[in-house]
Length: 162
Image 1 (cartoon, helix red, strand yellow):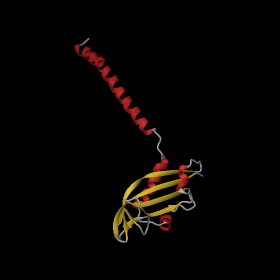
Image 2 (tube, rainbow, N blue to C red):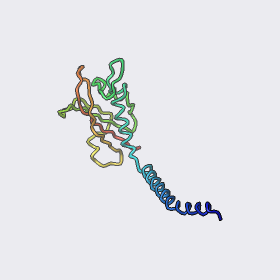
Image 3 (cartoon, rainbow, N blue to C red):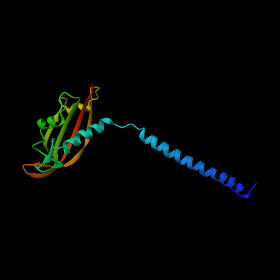
Image 4 (cartoon, helix red, strand yellow):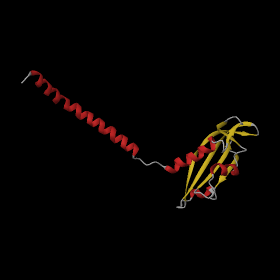
């Protein structure tokens, strides 16, 4: 037997603990990735957030438009009506209801728009007919008679069951 063959087999034996460590690290990473992808995602909250963001970012909804461009996150009070929002969302006869409340920083209600036949007060009552998702308030700017002011939009999305 040659001296090089003996050295190679010792290197193979010395590599076994390193391979075991490598397999263990790969296994732990794989388990971590699988746990991340297999967790439950609340589709109701994601859908509700998407509907709310349409209010702030779409020129067809309540986003301010000066004729040249649309300013996302700035609400035009002229567009913040039930009639305009009904055109924007087209939720009539669907399984979605929306309620938006715009308040100034002192807490006074500036304007409210509802697109639902279900009262938001019923959201506190557990029922199997619909789910209510109350989103976190969002700070926004709004135009009132040509003056830009700051405020908070609270929203509740009502998802009806079939």
